[in-house]
Image (cartoon, rainbow, N blue to C red; front, side, top):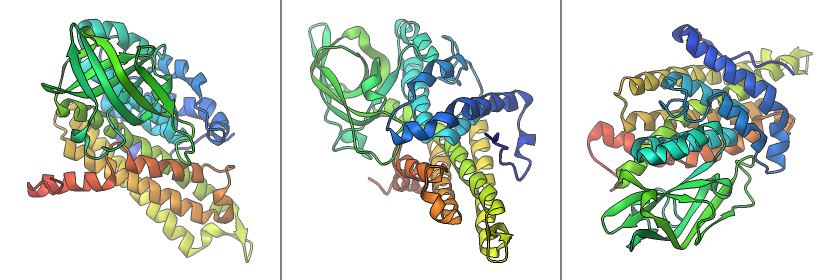
Length: 389
């Protein structure tokens, strides 16, 4: 199997430190050696490749940009490069890593008690434990403030009732970070597998993210102890801050999917011959598509790098991350579509990764804030007027 050569038109690598390049190479080799050989079968069989979890934990991929508790303490460029390489393998696998780190470990690290951190973070970092994030509900996706899941105090415990859906890792999670409405406002809770009144059921029939577990969570008089409340997770703003962490990883990750599509199409058009036995890469219309893709990938790399630098400096805004997620996902999806076109009929075959990336990216465009929502976030940032309210 040929090694991925990378995509670097504008000497992007010259902007990275030696340590950042080493982190990317570690992730790149992991994807080439462990993910690429198995991901087609996993996607076709709608099976998450759980055999990769412990290896990713050992490499420090989970919660890579968090400090302490066994976490790698990487900067956000290094973290982004890991997301890029994993999504080059498959969006579903990157989604697992994003949820584990950004949506489970991050809220425990940021809003949890010291006891909660000591108990869960080392296990989540190593892959010994799996987590999920319960915010979205059947009737409330883009409007999480409308949530109907409730948590009421009953003696020394909290009792949860409600339902969450489209939950990555839901049925395999050992712990769920669940957001619920209380008399004091929206709060975050840790709900452990096996708790009475808590159950999860998988969502079947997906034509996208097939190598990822997607579930619904159900709470029926689910009673949890007071110490399972995240003490500092108060208000919807806390939940949305977790989404910003995940969106940042997505903005980097989809570059990997775009790179894989571009490199597949580039190599194919150089080897495919038609008409006068010249490679179809010699045709103007083919070169126009390749030129568009490499230009947009390069712009996406630079956007991701700047947002990562702002994040490391403590200057990033949610609206910055909205631009990163919106632009780069749209770019990657168009790269997949153009690449499919360049491969012709072969573009739909699972021998090539393009159709798998295209289907996955349709989901990535929707989750963690739809394209439309991020458009309005950017619009509010530049006008001061919140059009979605």
